[in-house]
Structures are given as structure tokens and as C-alpha cells.
Length: 243
Image (cartoon, one colour):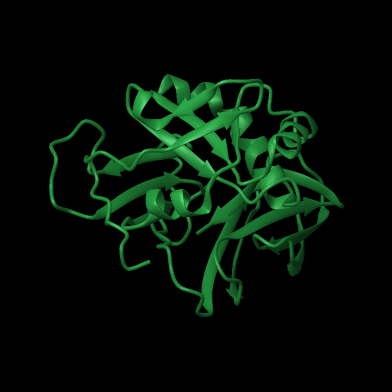
């Protein structure tokens, strides 16, 4: 690992060529997006979290395209497994690459100091709302790429809550949902899951329309936490992903 060269935002990335489901070879050097290219490295067909994540990405591809973002999902699976994932997970629009060499993946990913900030501001659209350095900005020596994502549907205790990528130490994470007016009294359950698919019941409470269900949870998960709200046993709203 010591021979890897660090990557610098706004500078050329190492070469990345992968075969794609349906035929053809996708080359990073050939991409000319309006803003930037999103490389999504997923574990493979065996990963249930990847299935949900890429399914969600599939539904947002048109919005990404409007913002000048092109996406590809890549794994080290072989052609058959990649084709099965694309069909089984209903990834009709998303380009799926396969046969990724792990050494090449390490070279592409090495050197980035990525910081993801998640804020809750109902006055801003959902999704990526800021990037520093900005796409198309001047080249510089900074090695930190900061992405700000608006994910919470409501404000928390302040005008916004920020969550920064952390190591695997225990940490407190917050969640919040606004319950639509007109909904009668229901039993609410908040579940948390990690990248490995482990699922834990975080809280249980009674809510009705007009309430704001908010809370915090002491997580020992390594990596992002995915919160899901069930009302009367039925999923409500969009899951909340906290880095």
C-alpha cells in the first residue's frame, strides 16, 4: 500500500477500465460529465444492503443527470453475477460494471480525504446541496473533498444538524421524521441497520399526524447507519442514512 499515489481533487484520477453488463468497456478517462462522475463501488450480488442502495440510486438517476452527474456501479463480481444483480435488482438505467481488479480499486480510492456533512434544512432540496472544491473550480493542493447532503425531512434542535464521517468508535446519531397531518394514532418503531444488514429496534412510541418524531441513538455500528420508520408495521417515508 505504500506505493499508492494520493489523489488530489481537480486532478486526473488513475485509469479505470471495466467491462459493463450488456457489452462494451467503460473507461473513466472517456467520461465527459457536465459536473462530475460518480463511481459507486459495491460488494456484489451477495450484498442485500447494496441491493437497496443501488435500487434507490436507480430511482434518482434522472435527478443526478439534471445536475450533470453521471453514475456507474462497479464490483469485482464476474459477468454472470453482475448481470443477475442488474436484472434482479431492476437496475434498468444504471450502468453496471464488473470484473474490477481490487488493486485498481485501491489505486482509484486511495489518497482521498472525504468528508460528508449531513444537514437537516427543510428550506433546501433533498440530496447533494454543496461541494468543496466546487465542480469545475480551480485546481489546488487541498486533499479534502467535502460533500454536503440535505437528508433530514425536518429541522432538529438547530437550523441544521451535521454528521461527519467518523471512525469505528461508538457515537450518538440523531433521527427525525414529520408525521403527515390526518394520520391517526399509530404505533411507531424506529429501526437501525448497518452495511452488513444487522437490524436493531431503536425506539417504539405512539404518534399521530402533526407530530415530529425525533430522537437519538448510541451506535456501535462501523460505518453509516440507516434509520427506517414503521407506522403500524408499515414503512413510512424515506429511510434516513447517517454517515
